[in-house]
Image (cartoon, rainbow, N blue to C red; front, side, top):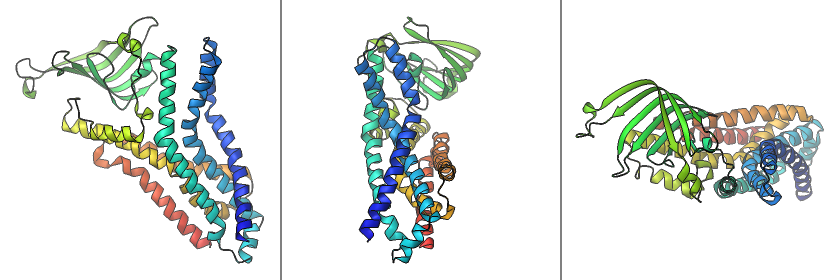
Length: 375
């Protein structure tokens, strides 16, 4: 009897999950579709455009799979409860644990699939897409200045961008590096800045605002008391991109790195960067936050099933609108913790990489407890 009912529950869940997955993935792929059409309009062959589009799907699935699992779980158990099917199963001698166990096992399998996708598949497909864009000459040079990491792609500079919104950047540090001995010759700090690039020119123009320039003493460069400071309202910088356009390989961003590469960056963040201990701790913290988010997202299907089963039963609603509202509420809380961790990624004393785990473990324990109470 359990086997037949288990197949019945899984079949209904699979139908709801498949429908939700198609709709959510399509909605999240609209940006990639628009980009693919733009690439196609530039005369790029259809095969390359299709490769670009399909390379975007694994990253989209890292979010659409958990969302679809949550929606399907809430809707399924809301319907089973509203139609009294759950009561009929219980009166037949089945416990809620027995009814839910096939679904929990399926969610565990989906979490394993998400783990493989988040740690290996989508980083490689995202990197493949950036390589495609570069080979087609389409990648926007402005995107080379990525936020939240030290950038050493521009000759003579090591750059850190705190925040970025299009061409507007904030919390900036530019280190000018000596080509002879590789040491920092001066540092330029700015509150805000604007990036621009005129097509055909081999450089990016960065106009910095509210600038402070630090010039180490020539004879005593390590003596901070002899450092000279210059303040300026504006300061222009030109970043050479000619060598980058000639380079065949594309430098990897955090999102393009596999877990092994992220771990390596955490362990070797201070190698050849010339950073002080505080900067090393902050940079290592940023890498840790990104690494832990990969695992946090991978566990979302299991977490959402454990939470969705009791919430669906308590809702006693079979309508998709009710399931959608509950899904949005749960997703908001779950992903809000990721946003909080991101906002604190430069504060290692707060251990921000652990913040999402508090939500995950609390949700899983709370879900198990609610299932136990309903049982």
